Length: 152
Image (cartoon, rainbow, N blue to C red; front, side):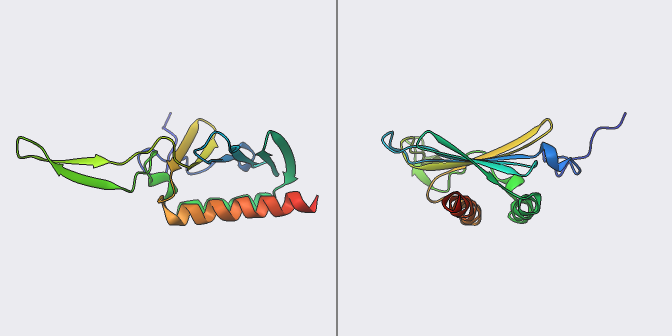
């Protein structure tokens, strides 16, 4: 039996049922006093928005999910590192070698987006200086869902 073909060496399968797609977006303020916001989008046509321990269900059409997935493919989401660290610096070690360090602040605001289908999952976590294309997509999804919640 041939292995299932994927996008790239460790990417998602080339074909999969829309009903099995789950996309999760999680925003953490970095301060425990502020609530975590979560959006879960399902290929079954629904979205769950969690804020301040309140769960709200809204309709999310599969056509909108397909458009969102196309945007993720366009920005090469599946090729991004799981921990996006855009700030690097170098320093000189005592032995004359240059070393590279990545700045990671644990208590800073972050966003995590996860795509899951069948046995495949890809998550990317980033901070304020994260990939701007991905942040624009996430902001648009949060805005769209918040508008739907207000209309209810």
